[in-house]
Image (cartoon, rainbow, N blue to C red; front, top):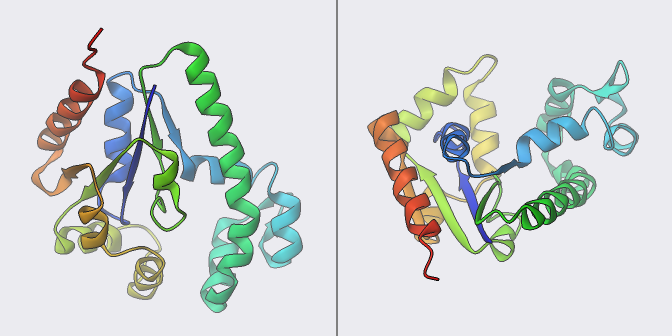
Length: 196
């Protein structure tokens, strides 16, 4: 089974690209979706003990947590020490299930792939990229996004140029959805060609 890691900076179209792999039948494990689920389940108690102001109605309120981290960005490490092992455990369970299913190719959608050493857990890396102006427009069009939040998020991510230099495959989403879909199809085709 080939494990493909997908990453890309905020606003480059990573989630849309991951969905394109899914549309082609590639099983996808979404680290962001896993974190969102953990904030309603296993991570509630440990995160609430660190950030009591983020607890609301028995779940972690992501906006309140975000605001707390914006006030004290040096505390990201504390949160990551709780969240990363929980996400890793879910990822492992996903990989084991897909191995049992005989899947030839799976995708791990990991926003902070390089930042967390995730490239060591995958066979190949796909980096989603686009022109910085397009990226900025996309991000600032999101509800509740500000220039300050955008800068904070970018400061926590490796530069796009560094990610591109470490990629096995690049997908440029700045050329439209059809062009991106064609690039995804080419990657899947290349990785699932079987030499028996």
